[in-house]
Amino acid sequence: MTTINTISSVAARFPLPAGAGSDAVHTNPEYGYAVTRLHTANQLCGYGISFTLGAGTQLVCDAIELLAQPLVGCEIDELMSRFGAFQKELAEHPQLRWLGPHKGVLHLALGSITNACFDLWARARKVPLWKLLLDLDSKALVNLLDLSYLEDEFSPEEVVVWLDGQRDERSSREAVLQHGYPGYDTSVGWFDYPDQQIRENALRAVDAGFGAIKLKVGSPDMQRDLRRVGLVRDAVGPDIKLMLDANQAWSLPTALSVGSELATLNPFWIEEPTQPDDILAHRQLAHEWAPIPIAVGESIPNRVIWKNYLRNGAVGIVQADCTRLAGISEYLAVSIMATHYPVQIIPHVGDMGQIHQHLVLFNHIALGHDVVLLEHIPHLRDRFVVPVRVEQGHYTVPQEPGTGAALKIAMADHV
Image (tube, rainbow, N blue to C red; front, top):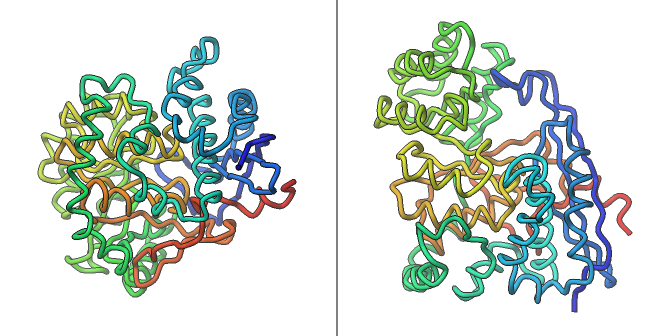
């Protein structure tokens, strides 16, 4: 038996090289993780993370310590057999709920706690997360999920039936386990990088086997954006997918104007064009920019807001992130819901791809989502105990037990 006997947290913050991580809104980022550690008597530990930009990480850790206390004394297999109900109890705490609900510091804490539970579970079973999820029967999988407020989409029983119906197709989708999952390089075009650097980065990414790259836009000077996008497009040619990310910098009128100009340069998507709570603005932009899809996700905090995005046709690329949602469990709920709409899931990787490399395999094999792309950000690669492996632009399939979320700094004082 693997029983949780103590809980601790770590506020991990990592300065970035000059210009790295910068965008039109976040001008001085510092990558950070609020880390949950679930300790057991047999020296096994589960590690969970939620993503921050540095300042405020300790606030999330304080919320972890407050929220996670009911986990003490829980045996991990028994806990995960009813995890959806347990997660709902944590999220609906009658006093702490007021601090959200289902968003902000408290929700980030819940995501870190949830991810630690999945990591401990996979470590206890000695399998990587993707295999753990694929080996579950449909009822056990649904028991991991809090589907409250999604009753107008489906019932748990309907999800079980749908998952069972997908099982006959799994073998035809398992080739991804041999080929690996294609990535895209998001570190090519940070906002503060000079023009020559983004051109060199783009050519380097293509030489490394990436067939898709991303460039930050959202400058007050539209001509700067157009020049830089044109520069990269000319460097890499017409066959490389080029994504553009405004990081919420535009008002709706500005997005309508600038986006129409950028659309002439054939972007694969335009990401976070405006304030993420403005679903109606995204719906209008999705209509105006079609067939170029809108991508959003890194700032969408919960499954209920995702439901509204999907129902309104306000998103074409779902960038759900298990380090910004309530962890792996809510990510899976969003992935299942997204199968009912003509959208693709390409996660934002606040985890640098460590956990999502598992989740995209599950999404494709078990849920039937297309194999498209998975974001790759290399800046914290050496900070993880077992970093992702990307070869010729593809994530190789991880084989180590767990989720891959363990950071070296979080293990340094492990007890």
